[in-house]
Every structure is written in C-alpha cells, then in structure tokens.
Image (cartoon, rainbow, N blue to C red; front, top):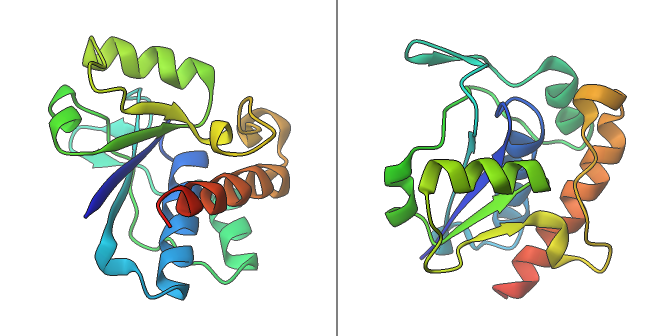
Length: 153
C-alpha cells in the first residue's frame, strides 16, 4: 500500500485537484487497493475551527469538465504527525516544499517532492488562484499524476 499526500497552500485548488485526478487514474486502472490518497494544506487560511472550506468552485468545475467529482472534500491542514502516516508528500510548488519543511522540521526519509519533478517539465504547478487558469493547472496536475503513477507502475 502506497500512501500519498498531495499538498498545496490552502487545500482548495491544486492539491484536491491532484487528489481526485490521481484517484480517477487509479480507479480507471483498477488499482484503488494499492494506494491511500489524500490532500492537505500548509496554511490554516481555509480552515475555520474543525471545518475546512470546500474545494474552490472553479477548481471543482474544472474537475467536473473531465468527469471527476470532488464532492465532500473539505480543506484540512497538514500535521507533523502525518509524516509517519504517509510514504510520500507531493507538493505543488517550491513554497509548499518550504512550508512542509516548517511543519515537519526534517525530512529524514526523503518523502517530500514536487509533483512536476516527476515529469520532464519540472518546476511548479501553475497556480490558478492568481491566474484564473484552472485549465493550465489541470494540465500540469494531470501530467504530474500520470508520471507519478508510472513511477509506481
């Protein structure tokens, strides 16, 4: 069982998109039993008390265009205790990697990676929060998830 946590700043756009794109890919391959897949935030901006905000409507809409549902997903914050619960933490950008480091303190097992590092493009996943280009973010995330899945193929 491979346990994967996708991580972004608020857990309302890119990391939930990655979570549900990856879940869709493994479902289509009949491999759901091989993975535990989740997503979380490095910040608390989208979390109020114990309740997180739902997936941002334009992100949800972009997933829907591709036949993917993210119903019921709410933002959660990454916790230090998650380090021992997951095999890999897949960040959407360099700032996420830095913030994950602040939460974990150390990464002795080399579990933290950027999603685009699995592709031949590398770099950061385009941030639709600022650009409004959820289609571009979807493309980056989809390509990264396909490459990540091949890694565990």
